Length: 352
Ligand SMILES: [Zn+2]
Image 1 (cartoon, helix red, strand yellow):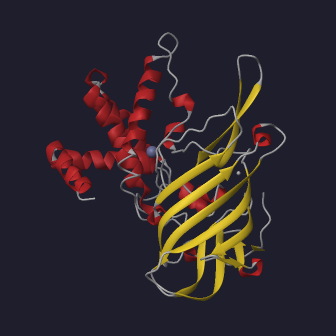
Image 2 (image 1 turned 180 degrees about the horizontal axis):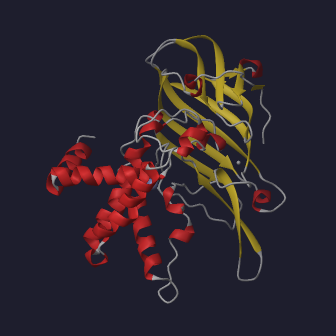
Image 3 (image 1 turned 90 degrees about the vertical axis):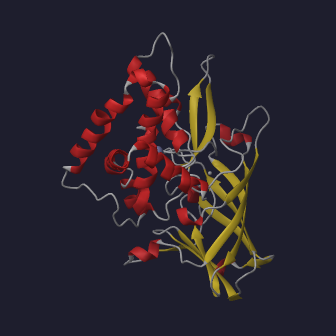
């Protein structure tokens, strides 16, 4: 379902040194706890050909400013080899020779050996120039989509879906929720086109936008059920501005906090605004019952369960995380009483 995912509006060839690991441990998929990123500058260049059927290529430069928590001699970050081909890496104004970096094509981890000890307490610049491929086979990362206009002409657009682990398809980055920081995006694009951002600055995770199918409503054509869906999708995605963007779980094993709160507010806020729709009662049918059905399956996972690989992370976007997560939070609201629940959340948010 479209509203079950988060997206960002945006815009991606691949030759890199590849390593294939035989036996990977869960920790091999995680970045070392060595870095504190402070900002990204991302410049993407989309030529006119990218908006035709003939080319899916683009180029980009990402500048990452970060400091080190511990002394080390290497940098590890994410870059997806099917979509990103690195042409040049510069660390603190010194070019890193191509023999000193490599990408693991299973874990998507780009390892850069800088050849000397890096000290803590200093902000460093890492600049990566690359060419990329726009995804056309799925709607993840920086992908190309199309529509037919009123004259019957096919028009192309480029957009993004970065959650959960797809920002690494658009630009090399520390693609983990705990390493959240600010982004500055600039885009070079052909005249006659427009670029839309959903915020001036946004985090590495969970930028809430949704597909047009969940937004287009026609008073004369659409059903009441569909109208309700459009309203609740908007409420869900708005809730992510706080529960997801402002507050972010450290790791994907706690995704239920993100989607549980957004599911809870999807109904709760809409009920506050439109009580005649009785979404407080609908929650029981739509979410609690679904959670019970999902939880009865043999393959049901716990709300909080070990999660490592990108495939495992994707599988956590489940009825358990959404419906059971929302149901448990509603249960907490009921035993605490709404005023206490609300005051507690407000106090937590105000402490940030
Ligand atoms: Zn959501």
